[in-house]
Amino acid sequence: MKTLKEHCGIFGIFNNSLASRYVYYGLYALQHRGQEAAGIVTAQIGKQMFYHHRELGLVTKVFEDDSLFTQVLRGNIAIGHNRYSTAGDSDNKCNIQPLIGDFKGRTIALAHNGNISNAKNIRKHLEERGYIFDSNSDTEVIIHLLDETHETNLVEALKKALLYLEGAFSLLIMTNESLIAVRDSKGFRPLCVGKIEDSYCFASETCALDLISADFIREVEPGEIHEVNQKGYFVHTFKQETQLARCIFEYIYFSRPDSIIFGHSVDSMRRKFGQILAHEAPIPECEEEVIVVNVPDSSNTATVEYVQECQKLGYKCRLELALIRNHYIGRTFIMPHQGMRVDKLKLKFNPVKEILKNKIVVLVDDSIVRGNTSRTLVNMIRNAGAKEVHFRITSPPIIDACYYGMDFPKKSELIAYQMQENIEKIRQFLGVNSLAYLSKEGLFKAVGEIYNVQESYCSACFTGKHPYPVSNTDTTKMYSKNI
Ligand code: SF4
Image (cartoon, rainbow, N blue to C red; front, side, top):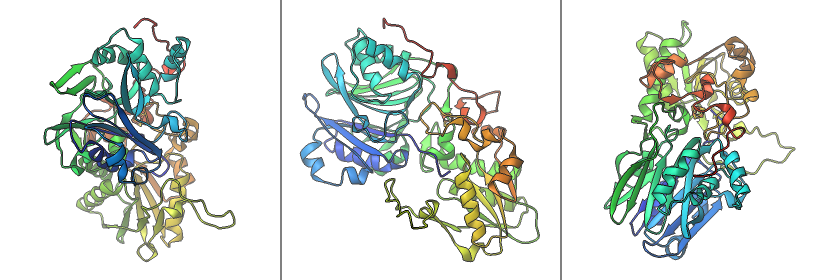
């Protein structure tokens, strides 16, 4: 997958003298979830002042000045956020999180991973009620909604306000007395609880806990509010759902393979995708040994298992690392001069000609979005000398947009939607000898469920079955005035 943008990463810690440094490392581990901007907000328990630093750029760049941690980000409570904008302008600095706002005369800070799909309607209503918005991100509606409730207790206000939100929201909210973690009732995005020494912390993925050597305690379950303050640790429920909608794409692409999310290791899920795909669409039958090539990094794990399973099935093939990825291009690389012929994809990948020359190649990737990047990649492999290129995809065709925090292009730009899931037409467009996707049945089998029978995952981008009516999405739904 080369054209998708991840959403956001959040990390928070309560009652730790190194709070801002731990949040920095948490954000560092979660960099893959958002690369446009980063921010940390801190406070000292019991003191009024909030401190913050928020800027555009990667975590290492935003916090490169070490004095930020000694002179600015003081205190023992902290939350942080890595941003990739799924709603709101990416270059508007007011959108950089954590946002700082007011709740009944007290300062709060809020970090959000996900996308509130009915945010525009709620915002319109709040603006009519006189609320002034500093940002144009969907997250700010939460702060004003909280203030709109008649509750003076923040957790009680959350229990009411959150009922008006649709879509995905894993949240961290801090006051100068407490740290609160929230996961939407359908559980779209992951959020986990950790503990280091006597301090509780929260992170989008467990890989962030690993980096700071925190113990993984549990996940924040869908519909839960976790509150930690000096009196203790409290778990509240704001809504119980019968139908969960955990984002299945987290397993395919978004989350790191060394994380545990939704009760499973991402690594083991990706291995199952590769294993099942090997049964559904093994390498082509031929006399000579076939080279199987992963598209780094998100297809690495699935490819390893795909090859092993094909070998078990009796196919002659071996894994080769024939595509080398340059990890050092930031999001803001300088575009070459117009006269220079530098392919954008080449900035990221280079094929190893010696491996590919005169070989039958099976390329394995995690997904295809518009198709242009995949086609260029296939050309690259052919130009490196491969005599055949076959393509295997460890997820089903993407046919619909995501309203829950993932920056897919418009539905009309998706190649599988354009071609009405006609695999032969997509094959021709990509210019490959054969093409196969993991089936929807195979995808659900991997996560231990039965497609169309027993589902607790969102798969709307593959199936068009949306957890919320699409007609509600920023268009028709109005929320009640009196909350
Ligand atoms: S539409 Fe796709 S990417 Fe979006 S939440 Fe659902 S499964 Fe995840």
